[in-house]
Amino acid sequence: MTQQVDPRNPAVQENSAGFEFQGEGRGPGASSNNNTNSGNESSSGDRWPSLLNARQVLVAFVMETVSRSRPLQEKLNIVIVRAWQFYLTYAQAYPLLTAFLSTLVIFSAIPFLIFASITGVSLGLLAGTAAVIVIIIQSIVVTIAGAILLFVLGVIVIMTVFTFFWLTVGYFAFQFTSQVYISFKDQRLRQAREERTKERKEKEGEDLNEWERQDHDDQEVPGTDASYEKEK
Image 1 (spheres, rainbow, N blue to C red):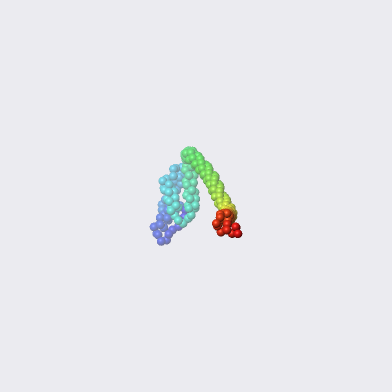
Image 2: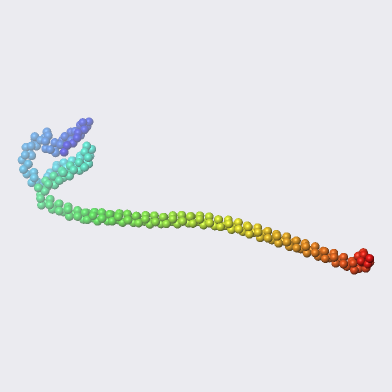
């Protein structure tokens, strides 16, 4: 693992240098440790890795996570590779225990996998059902809204047409009624005029008959001018 050094921060440079030397097994203290480690190199695979290696893994994980010099995917890849290497080291040292622990981890992870699968399938079904329900509801709402809109537009059109029709019919009916009323009024005036004329003629005839009767009576009465003229 390489660590980029910030030249402006000597503390980081020293720590990173010490970390690299410690991880690689080289550095100023390597000469003193070569003698002690040379005798244990053959038996390093037969003993449980020391806490120093676990600390190195933890420090590497923290440094790779905190470091901003590499993308997150590369950091995770480095951590995964280191973890896999230590797992292989443990597997070589204690194969039966590693197999048992791996089997235990796998079997303990099965319920979580089943739960995750069921949850995923359930969420997928719920999401699909919700989407279908939403689509159906939207279709129903759109259909109802379209029907209401068509009904309203139809009512407006029908009311407009019938209003215009009845206005036209009412106008012509008013004109016809006015003409009928005017003709009826003229006829009544004509009849009243004729009746007055007839009554005047009848009255004039009655007056004429009355005058003629009076003249006839005057002629028949003796001593009147009419009788005197008649005797002559």
